[in-house]
Image 1 (spheres, rainbow, N blue to C red):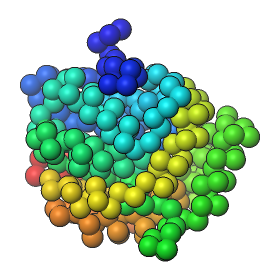
Image 2 (tube, helix red, strand yellow):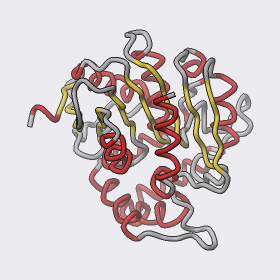
Image 3 (cartoon, helix red, strand yellow):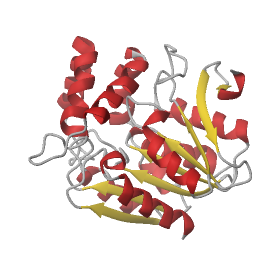
Length: 280
């Protein structure tokens, strides 16, 4: 069992997967809220097929990682990611983050990855930076009421909430003419319900109120920002369009009509673009 877990400095067991040749370039995947490393199955198999080493871990309190009470904030998320990377001694790695995982990538690369000289490139997909919450300085953000609503829905009936999110806005299944996959909805629910209600509840604050302006400014490696313009979970205006202004070495690609969960619904298109960026 020990070969699939790393213990962090504060004693938390973090589950990870590490597939493919150990001498190949590593690609590290960072999942969104409230999911697990399993959300990357499609991408991990794709890049494995293309000869890469692929690594993904479950965020603390999520998936198979320990359901600890404390540390559900972006600093711990990034430190936990670094614990996995340091344990495996990954170098020249590409870090890809979806949604909250995009925030995790931004903080990890700025605080650990680049200072340690371990990162070649980064990718932010449907990602939360620089800041989701509406403030005086961030008028394009979402009001606190939106996030309070998520907290209430989670506390009242997490199991139903975790069906409603994927069945509706996450994959754009609430849009006219959408092709709905029951398996995708069930898999989202399965991943979510594996995790801790406390980690998920507190994670809402982490993904909505963490200002990552400085993280983005401090990243110098080539960074690809991918976002759908019909993202109902992380609206593109306050996220990708702002992130690209802050990145020193950023490239933005916008997908017309694509939803938040576009890595799943449009995996073939996203995988090809990710591969081109990594090889380029």
